[in-house]
Image (cartoon, rainbow, N blue to C red; front, side, top):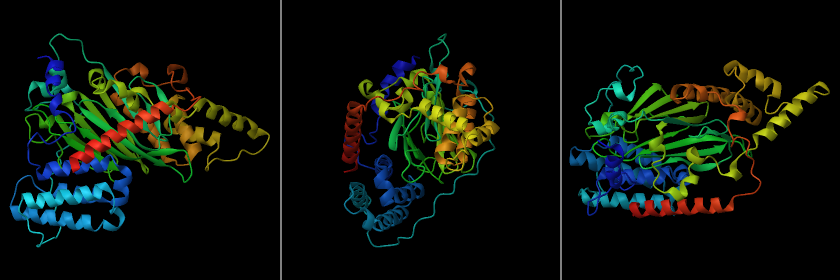
Length: 451
């Protein structure tokens, strides 16, 4: 079995599209489309709160069941959407939801009059005891060979090379190439976008008027793949780190290899792990303080399975942040050290409650080695004053030790990475224009699906 040939044959089913040609939209398909659209339009979803309506409908609607139960859920969904009219009127997402509900009402012959009480969400089965860490090769499953990444590789082929990307703190990015950057990247930015999954983060200012940002929202879409998994979405926000996908399930759906994609809650509300064994990928999402962190272990083949070679510079885990979004860390270090050196002559002014010396001392408690994770911790304390960023840097390094395949590269130092000190000399307007065009194209496609 040749993985590349098998996976290439699946590309027609691995995209954003969830409806086949001539197929009638089902309730779950419409919900998926609306959820994808809203999640990739963060400004709309934050203002309109339609995301909450859609999540409630999705979580409480069974794929099969009595017609009246579904119609009751649909009327409750319609009522929830109507309550957002004041803040959402005029927004495309709001009107798309209205049209979707009307279509479902007609398709299922539901009356607009009737019970509108929100149905009780399905009670998930009790959580099984946590399983010890296992590799892809040793995890039993009823799925076919193609749904286990390492098993599906050609016999006698070289072991896959696993790479790592991390995104944490204020924010700091470690790319698949082990480049380390500190970036601005306010708003919605794509971390990963390939044939098998897409990851997008939304970063918000840490302090009013500050250029420092941190991740407050994260959306992951696993695209449907052969007989292994259905399309699944995982969505997390500040104070909402769910232990399931957006549809309430914990695995990849109803296909034979569904158990090769699953969500595992490690610490309720703080630490979730998503195991996608069919593509040899492990994702770790944490909430530390008010913000989210992201880490991934992924085979090099999957990393490079890009759909649009020309636009891959837009995806941060692959090529890093745009030059005009990077923060010159060397200049920051020099200024902080200069301020520390002048403290003997006059009292040092604390930055957001921390001096350079006290920030270093606090970070040393968790990060004894003065590598780039230590330096990122110092940077975050001085720029925000939020002590939780100490833990964010600590857990980011713990994730590296768990996910990175090369122990020699767990610690990164300034001399080890070429992009870390790359300071922008001029704004890359061409890249910004290209990013906007791609975003507009994605918006248009999703809107077309919704309508």
